[in-house]
Structures are given as structure tokens and as C-alpha cells.
Amino acid sequence: MENKTCMVEEVQQPSTIGVIVKGIDNIKYAEKIKGTSNGTYLMKGLREEMIAVFKPIQEETFYRAGKKKGYKADREVAAFILDHPAQEGGEGFGRVPPTSFARARYTNGETTDWDSGSLQQYVPNQEWNQRPEVFAIDDVQRLSLVDVRFGNNDRHNGNILNSNTNGGRLIPIDHGECFPTEWNNYRFIWTTWAQAAFPYPYYMVDYVKSLDVKNDLNTLKENGIELGERSEFIYKVQNRVLQAGVLGGYTPKDIGKFMTKAYRSKKEKAPRTIIDVMNCMSGIPEAWSVEERQVLELVHEKTTSALDYNRSLSEENLKGSTSTYRR
Image (cartoon, rainbow, N blue to C red):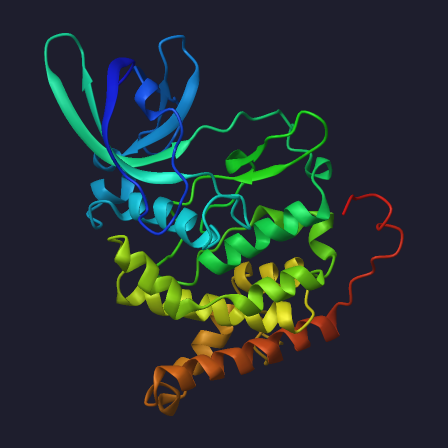
């Protein structure tokens, strides 16, 4: 499906969200983006204007590796649905661009084929040259909530856009590796950014308090998305980590390091990472013989202890940095 005449004939919009991908009827061409691990196409209009980004299910790397067909498409759409506010209109808290399931028909002049996949609104990117200082503290904190909540395994500079020509306005894309089946491969580039050392403001704390995991999973099922039992459980664990961290007064860096650090030194006996916490619980048979609610409460308790321990070992010195970054 490279550089071919194309028309998006069918789009399944998330039924509970009053936002659509704009300009669908104007799509005429599909141009393959080079250098991506999955098939990714720029969907253009008659005058070559950028309208959307399409990712066919048939070209997903996980699908080729034997994973469930549509694994990444489901997660791309799920991230938008759960990021977006319940009320119609407006922008999602984490600014995930409008994303839908779509079916594209394309032709090379002789034959016509169909591809199904995810379709995301195109967002112009103002070059930020991998200089995170262009982004405000608020931008980075919102990004951290998206990545920890959804369990992103692939947050790097290449899937962070800047939509503002005057300064920075962070837009996160590429969420096909969220809602994972394991908790040992999280990747958050922002843990190295100075803005991640600031605590969350009250309105973000209130936002985390308002999150409802059970409602989230029901909403996804209403829209035809089944993450699978394993991913659903890990999603619940991630949200417990998010609550323990944000409501406990920890910074994005504190929480991100807890999620991404792979190991602790042999001299350290106390759990320091999410892997430590889950491995510790695996050694307590009775921890898994109770109701899921009690398991998650234990996750919350051990996460809080680990974050406390990490803070006691290394206190962040924020003096002199508050004047550098915008709120």
C-alpha cells in the first residue's frame, strides 16, 4: 500500500466519544512513512495536505510475530478513548489525538484492496530538536500520567510532537505498545528530563483521584476492545502505582524510575521497582490466594514502601531549577 490512490470508506468512531477524525472524506492518497517498525501511512488530500495517519493491522509487527490480529490498533484507539473526557468535545487530559478504527480502500490502477487498522488525526510537528526544555512542566506531567496509566513500552523522542510554533505544546502519539502483557519493559524518556522532578499540582492529583479502572475497561468493551485478562490485570496494577505515587506526593521522575528501573543491587534488600514488588509478591503464595481487590491493595502498599525507600536514599534537589521551566 505504498503511494497509492486511497479512500477511507468506513470508520468506526468510538461510540462514547463525541470527537471524530476530521477530513476523512477528503482523503485521496496514501504515502508510506519510511523507517517505521510497523506499516505507517500519511493519508493526504487532493492537494497533498496531511489529514491523518493510518496503520494497517496486516503490517503490525506483533501480528507478524503471531500476536492477536489488531493488537496494536486496539491499543492505539484505547489510549484515545480513555484519555478523552466523558463529555462531548474538548481535548483529552493527555492530548492523545483523535483515533478511530478504519477500513481503507486503495488501488494501484489495476486492482483494489482493503486494509483495516487505526486512523489518527494528523498533527503538524514543530521541530523541537530533542530539546525537552521547550516544554512546560505541565506538558511533561501530563505525558507522565498517560504513560504510567497506560503502561507505555515505547515512549521516546520520536513519538512526542510539538504542536506550538511559539514555544512548546506536547502531543503524545504512537500508543500501540501500551496496555502490555508484562511489567518488565516500560520505557519513559521523560524520566531524564528536569521537568519530571517537580511534584504534581492539585488539579492533576484530583484527576488521578477521579480515574475509575472498572469504568475504563467497561468503556473499552462497549467500543469492541478486549485487552485480554493479563493486560487488564496489569492495567489495574499500573493504576494502583499511579495512585500510590501521585496521591503520595511523588514526582513523575520518582514514579517513572520505579516503573522503568530493571533491577536493584545485590546489597539492597528492600524492593525498589515494580519488578521487585511483583517478584516479592510471587514469593508470597497467600498474596495470590485472596481476591483481586486485596492483591491490588497489597500492590499499593508495597509500591508506597518502595517509593518511600527510594526517596530516603536519594532526595531531589530542586533549588535553582524553578525559574527555568514554565508552568
